[in-house]
Length: 334
Ligand code: UDP
Image 1 (cartoon, rainbow, N blue to C red):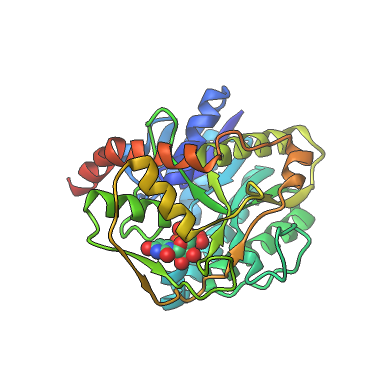
Image 2 (tube, rainbow, N blue to C red; image 1 turned 135 degrees about the vertical axis):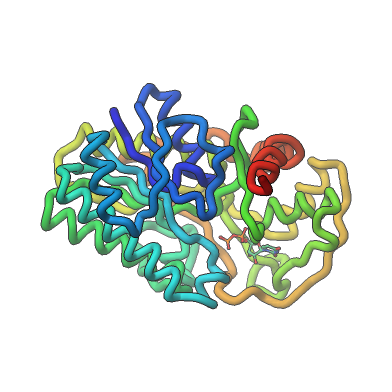
């Protein structure tokens, strides 16, 4: 299959491009390199372009005639979205609208989109099923929920098939060390802890220890990025092979939650290094617990995480942190 991946130079997008190529698909990467890195473009033909540029998108779809789109390009920092909601609405909602209209105008029928557990807001209970109410509490989560509604609207109007993959906490790095996480600024838990054990970060801050959880720190469901990537491959293949006009949101998680403190202990144990840390304020927009009920993805796609044991996630992230990640940082500073 020919597949266009927006945001293919990012953390999850690049891993997905690798998985698609490995599965025998032909990949086109559409990315504006605003947060992605040229050093992560290794699997596919690169087209530099913005998702807000509808004309360029249309030209690109006409030129390459993909059978499907995997849409990962988005702003994805919860905190940033609280400070600048307009940027998130413009880029995430507006950009997706351009993609859907370009698909409609060029006859592309299948789309898999990055969504997020943030659409659930603060759930009544965990694990979370896809049918539970969606009440996002941040602009980031709102944009992703609205995108899911847009998919359903375009599916009805134009016969698209779609899947929205609601990632829980993406973590880890490519098992072969060929791609991984490198955000600027880095806000995510595991990379920040790794920065703390190497001294890149003077002190790690636990953001709140008074949550209603067993040890007071937030609980999350960490899912290996290679498992996320394989779900994208299965999802786009499923849409291509299935009836037109189908659509569904799918949770991608393990069903197991770990607290910030548990992650801290595991990072220190696996890296065999200590970090200095202190307890700080809660971070706005953080629900206490997010854990997925993931059986729908297994039922529909036959997807099961295979690399998402916490130990493996941290080991892969650590290997990436001390080796491959440096190449991405160097490329960015050039
Ligand atoms: N967190 C923390 N210190 C940090 C970064 C994150 O205590 O320096 C906590 C954060 O409050 C949340 C969890 O770690 O409870 C996971 O945060 P992350 O940003 O990795 O992912 P999110 O859950 O926001 O998608």
